[in-house]
Length: 634
Image (tube, rainbow, N blue to C red; front, side):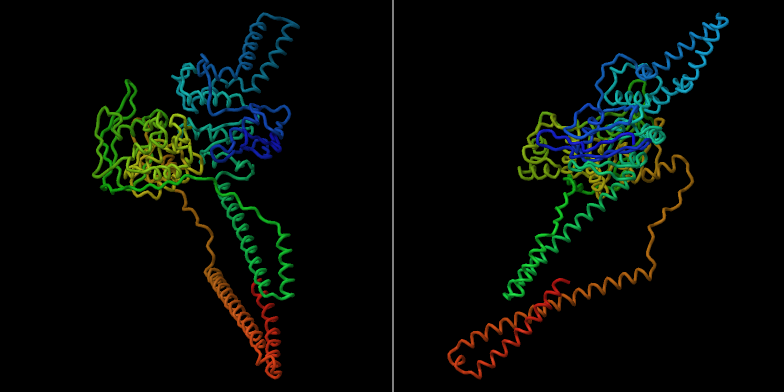
């Protein structure tokens, strides 16, 4: 065990973020922390690094082990170049190399004992240099920078001039190069393109140390991690396996807990009904039995109501009108910015009902293409033609379609003035904005919150052609899955840019890869794209789950039918018993009334007859009460 957290708790004001969280990481283990936005994932990483104190509990790092941490955002005004920032990590190796060069010079003129001492020192320094991979430090730096998407022409750029995403990539490279025993990464894939994410996956899978990651990239987690640490309403639970295995186990556990709770509730209601019925019989024996059942019920260990699945946005995408079959036609499109050519001679068609994903490295022009189609940029050459009755709904990753000075309420009401106050509030509530949240300024919202506002406007647009630029950025896993389901049920046409391979795999019917200034077309999802891109032999068809033999299936069906018939018979018998009890009790009440009449109570023969009938009824009732209780228990 290289890292452990024991009973860690953390609150901010009255809000409890972590409650007695305990987990551990083994040497060389790759693990992920998952949970909805705001669950406390980044908080937990900061507690582990010591940047944030825990209210209680402890974090233990194994003796003589090092910890490296990459936060989501990097504040840096360094005047160092990209290359020199990584070169800093190799200071000791460079100093050792300089010492070796000095020893080499000194040995040229030394003699006797001095030469012997210099040669011994050089041998030790050379061994240490080799042990620390000193002969490959240049290729290490270059390999990591290129793997993270930098080209050699950018190595000399000053870090202070870079965008936030580029700075994050630089410091990720620096962290990987320093090779700590435990790497902590907070959303490392946010600023990487697909090629860089794939490179990072391979690097981390082969990394000799331990890795703990916070990430929403489910494809990435499936490839890299073998343990999931879940934070759910402050409670921390460990699951073995990758993300898909975790999601399956989580759903099964939630369903099992819910079923267990509902079964106990049904049992409690049943016992309460039996107790009430027994008391209604108004017999000493029945009352004692009712009291006995009440005592058992009070001692029952009650199962707490399971926490519901986290609140999730409700999105339903449906076009108001149906477009023609030909939705988009692009011919010989070209775009460059100065001397930088993005693409040239690009031609493709999109038909109604297709869900087309545009992929490619950062800077190849994917977002530019969407802006040209949407009329926000002009092409240098070529034509873009929309089909008949096509209505575009545009989702911009930079949320430039939102007005930063407006409130959420005004943003929707100004865009859709026919909606009344209640309708606006209902739509915002569907996207998790309730109460006074609706009066927050757009400019004060987080990236994820602005994304939800943009999706709300997209839903209200009732467009038949959705153009989406990185729609899953800033969305948590639950929200991504809801958007995936909404797009898969959408009857219109979708064109989107995304780096989320899990999202692409679930939603795309076709992929356009922007590479070397043109498009390559793949008819299928992301797995199909990988298969064809790497020119692999056709994969064998996936075997379906084991099906039961016909005889077993028939036996199960027959057993189920017999159980249903048995239950119907029991219910019918219970009803007959209750009717018989009710009839006898009614007859006994009549006997009591008749016996009280003056002409009967003085007639000994008639009175004796009625008394005997009531005694027989009481004997029958005693048997029926026990029969009813037995049937009710079944």
